[in-house]
Image (cartoon, rainbow, N blue to C red):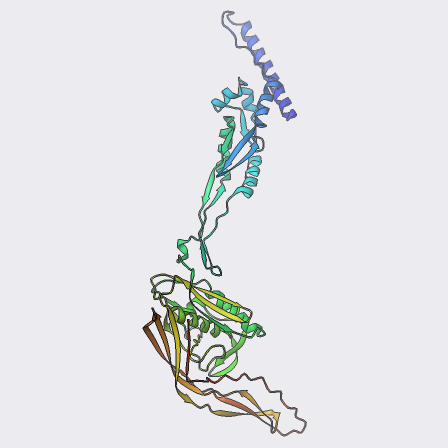
Length: 442
């Protein structure tokens, strides 16, 4: 700063000498009655008064916050050309006319403003659903410093020696608003359902979590049909799905995206008890081990679908969680208008399964093993009964058919005495229903 002041002082002296020479010349050849202007007497002490201005504290207002800095911190510097032209050193008078001889060093000012921005900008908060806590959090608009819009404000306030400068601020609206979420109440569990799976089958578990992630947070608007296939999309290798157990033509085999049907079945169960309309559902060709007979819903991309509709006059949201061997679906919304929803199943008819033999030329002669356990077919009636004030107010009815599951027995025909026995694969037999009638309620 001493160098700057010294430079300014040297300039003043040069300007003063030139003024005196000009005046002297003019006086020598002119009418002595015409008065001449006095020479400038500004020197280093005068410049120092302007330097004091740069060191003054200034309250920087940025929205609701206030930070104290100096004008120099904000990039304000003396303008040597204006200093040279200024005939007064009265800071108050010059400030009143917004005529203080300063300029803004843009690089310094921008650096200072960016530092303030990083520390004091208010971040935008998008609205979001906390499905675990069953709360909706509102959106909050952000507020940020407009760097380029603040530069002229700094210069204007500094020229007036103002004790404050209010920076230009820009409101930053939330990208996701509460209104845009499409739902305003998720405080009640209208219906839920849980299924279980072995944690050791990693690929199948991966598929479960991937499909569930596509559904979690889905909002079902009133009277609008919702499709599982549309929501989850294609179950392909490109989408990340892995090979795992699937049911194909009644037989359990390895296939792409195995496990997805457990996700649709668990969703079916929660929707059933929540009172959502079951627009379209297809049961498996064979019963599933993770859910009672008659309480499942298979899906196959792109044609076999689970379709639901929200019959209420308010939206609902699906909460899906897959972890620790458990798949859970909750339908969240306002309070369900029913005291109780009941699932009832009645077996109408059974059809015995058949057994087929598969010849194995590698397996030693006389050895047999089970490829697939047989399971009887069932025709049954499924009911959903709605109760309000302890009175039955509505009943839904479906006819459900499971074809018999063929039992496959492998028989060896290899007569080589050195043929080694084939290790039989592990078979999980389905549990026969212990009663023709079954019920559960929420």
